[in-house]
Structure formats: C-alpha cells, structure tokens
Amino acid sequence: MKILVTGGAGYIGSHVVKHLGERGDDIVIIDNLSTGHKELVLYGKLIKEDLANTEAIDCLIKRYKPDAVMHFAAFIRVEESVKNPIKYYSNNTANTIKLLEVLINRGIEYFIFSSTAAVYGIPENIPVSEDTPLNPINPYGRSKVLVEEVLKDCGLAYGSFNYISLRYFNVAGADERARIGQKYPEATHLITRALKAAKGEIKNFQIYGTDYDTPDGTCIRDYIHVDDLADAHLKALDYLIKDKKSDVFNCGYGHGYSVKEVVNMVRKVTGIDFEAKEAGRRAGDPPALVADNTKIKNILNWKPMCDDLEYIIKTAWEWEKKL
Ligand code: UDP
Image (cartoon, rainbow, N blue to C red; front, side, top):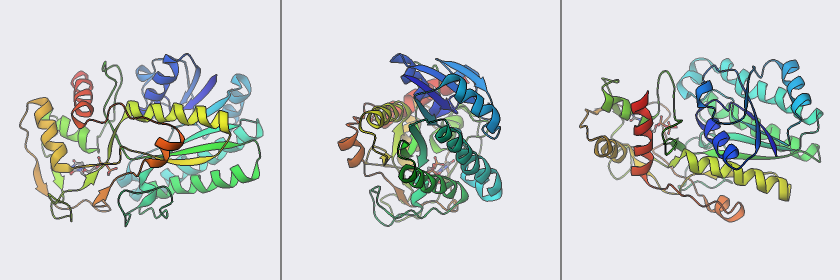
C-alpha cells in the first residue's frame, strides 16, 4: 500500500507513520514543517510542502499515486483559534477542501481525517457517542466540523470517494522507546505542561478551575495513548479499503481522569513534587469529556493496548526528558 500522510512530521502523524512503516507500507509525507519536525519521521519520504500550494500538491499526487491519504496537517490550539480564526479556517478548513478537490479529481478513493472531540463542544451526556449533535464552541472545533460536513457531502456525491473521520479525545504519551513524542514550542496540554513543571521549565503551573461539578471539582478528560490512536488509524484505513463505507468514530478509552488525578500521577511518575496552583477556570472548558467508544470497538475491532494513565505519563516523561 502506498499512503500519503499530510502532517506526518507532527505529533500524531509521526506516530501513525511509525505504525504504517512497521507493517511495511510505502509512505510519502507532506509537511510544511511549521509545527512538525523532520526528526520525528521514522519511515517514508518527507516532502516539505504547504497544502495551500495546490499546484504542487496536485503534482505530488500525480507523481506518487497514493492508494490512500491520511490528513493530519492542521493547527490545534484552541485559544489561538479564538484570537486568529482566519488562520484556522484557512489552514484547517480551506486547505483541506483544496486537498480534497485535488484528491477527488485524481481519483483517490480513501481518505482518513483527523477530527476532534472539540466538535461536541460542551456535551450534555457523558460518555459522548458519535450521534451527539455537533456544537463546537470555538473556531478550532468549527474548522473541523466544517470539514466533516464537506466530507459527508463528498462521500454522497462522488461514488468512489470514501472517508473516515476520527474524533480524537485527549491524546497523550509517546513512543515506548522515546524516539518520537510531542514537541511544541509552547505546550498547552495538561500532561505536557505538568511534565515541564516537574522539569522546572514551567514555573507557574496552574490547575484551571476547582469548582466544576465533578468528584474533585476539576475537569475530567479521556486520555488516549498516541500509539493506540495510531493503531485506530490503521484499523480505519483497512476497514475503509475493505468495506468502502464512510463513517465517523470516537477515539478514546471510555473513561476519564480529573486534572488533579493527572497532576498526582505526574508527581508519582517523575518523583518530583512540583507546585500546582489552583486557579480560575479556563474559558470554554467542558467539565467532562469522555468518549463512548462502543462504535470503534465494534466496527473497527479496535482494541486499546495502552489504557493506563501511568504508562501514558511514563512514556511522555521519557520523551520529555530528552528535549
Ligand atoms: N489544564 C490545566 N492546566 C494546564 C493545562 C490544562 O488545569 O496547564 C486543564 C484544562 O483546563 C482541561 C484539562 O486540563 O480541563 C485538559 O486540557 P488540555 O489543554 O490538555 O486538553 P483539552 O481538553 O482542552 O483539549
């Protein structure tokens, strides 16, 4: 199989590339390296190109003739999306539509899309199933919902075009041998920030909100190890090629941990009793976000292998220490 991976030099993309490479797929990666890093690419051929450059992308598709495309290239910072929505709609939405146009014109039949639990906004019922109404509360989430809508229409209109959208919950952890992991200039995610606080790199680590309607008052999230998420992509791809049925799946473990539980686990794993100041709520945080993963388990036969917060944090810590 020849797979083209956009954003394959990023955190999640590079783990998927690793899994594809390990099973012997032929991989071509397109990444503009704006947030990706070439050293995260363990397999395949990396081409530095921007998705906005439609002509170049078209040439690459014509040249490499991939059997399928996995699309990770996107911006992911919620706060930034509120301050600069155009950046998000133009890269996450418009560039994806341009990419789809090229792929459909070139007869590409299989497309895997990185979506997000942010499409649900603040869900009323937990765990969240895929048929929950989409109600994003920030431009980042909306930029992904718009693509999901476009994909739905494309799946209906173009008979040979099939896609799967994977809605990620809180992705964390790193390669078990610490070869690859999360590498952002300014970390916003809880586990990474807590690890950087343990390292002494972040001085003012805070817990955002302790008055939520949850057992310990802090937000609950469903943390999924990046290798399990990567495996979900391979399962999705194989299913799409075999069954040719477009669909949408949640990617999470179906249970969550509070911010305080995560912070305590980071202290345990690192052996460092760093300070975590209790602060006010961060705007737009839902109290709890946990996946109903029944669908992906039943249809894709996905079986999580790393559903263990301690393991997730240990792998992230081993990676973080190398940075
Ligand atoms: N969080 C926190 N301190 C931090 C970073 C995050 O208390 O330094 C909280 C955040 O408010 C949320 C949870 O940790 O309740 C997970 O946030 P993250 O940004 O990792 O992921 P999100 O759920 O927003 O995608």
